[in-house]
Length: 466
Ligand code: HEM
Image (cartoon, rainbow, N blue to C red; front, side):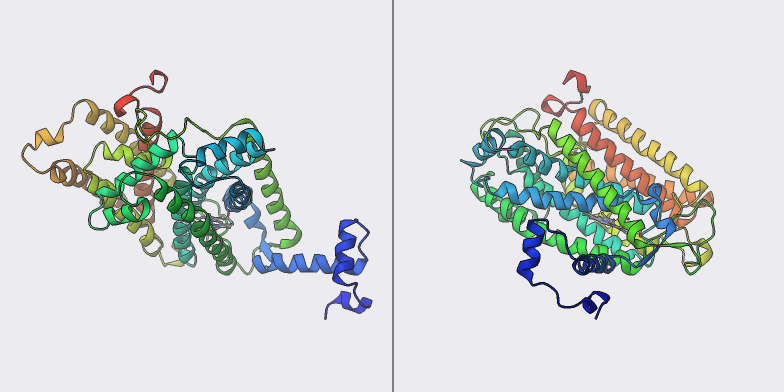
């Protein structure tokens, strides 16, 4: 029995609904009850008191909260869109046109859905980078890192399946390119493509399958895993920011504040800020809509969605089996194993909460980012103008001349880099940080080149000459 029960019988449900509609003042006991219920809900998600340090904005940058807000916006605007959207090749494009031109705030709803989907992907990657560079995935949070990787994959797949919905040239050809990459996946690739697209070209079958995944399969899965992810944050406790060389914290002695109102105010503030920015952006910047899809007339260049452009760029340089299986497979394996191989179990070597681990870690991050971006750009230009590996290794199958040989050479370069850092005294975690940074910078550079520096026939051009 709580305090308010002692104040006599409570009004019935209908009375309370009527009061809330007509804004009649709530009796003190009801207000207390509502507040208690809300507090209860919040304290299910958070501990009653949290370390003061957990509130530092320059640690988590509120990226997890931003991701939740964006997911909420996607759900809300997505439901509204389904009232007008028709998932058939004949009507999809027209239904989007009707929505944006004739329905009150229809364009705003579509813009918000489009931008929050793209932003959720960007925010999830930034959140992953924050977690990685503050070593927040070290035990006891290693399982939450794995859940996060699953979330990232689902967010990418949700974006990918949504991309086809407008049925314009952009949607049609980007999906055609992405699904045709599946043909290069040995063993299961063709069957997966057939399952998604139904054999042949993108058409009615593909649109229905993508629509089903986009609205029935992925959103509930995301909702379940996000809830579990957040619950685990509470179970594993927040990682806490530490200054460079600050010794591990004694969690029993650190200063704490009450979750309500301190953490709650911060979260509500961040959520409102995210919403305000999103609405402002969506009011001024329309989501793209090109001409209606024309399956007989591909644009030149035909590009995948921006988040797959790194892969499309890789396909211009390496054998497809390496681009679709070997490189993503090894990257995923590395990311999955990371939390189990990165942390040093000795308490005095614990680096959780320290940005970039150490002073050396900071230097290594900067150096590796420059190396990754610079070498990638140089190799892309060299491959475009001078390198011709199949000719150089004439007679060998392209899986070797354009796959095993160059990928093997690059892998050897990475092994030597990793090994030489060890010789310089870098810890395993610092070496992993260097390798991760180099690879991430390389992929980012490939994406930027693919999106901005590829013109007609996918030739390299300056963005302003496209
Ligand atoms: C839909 C995507 C995601 C949502 C909604 C989400 C949400 C959150 C929230 C609210 C927090 C607590 C506050 C914060 O750190 O900002 C958090 C923490 C965490 N997230 Fe995520 N997250 C997502 C994706 C990811 C990804 C991609 C990863 C990494 C692979 C990840 C790994 C973690 C870890 C390890 C923590 C604990 C961090 C700490 O205690 O410092 N999450 N997430």
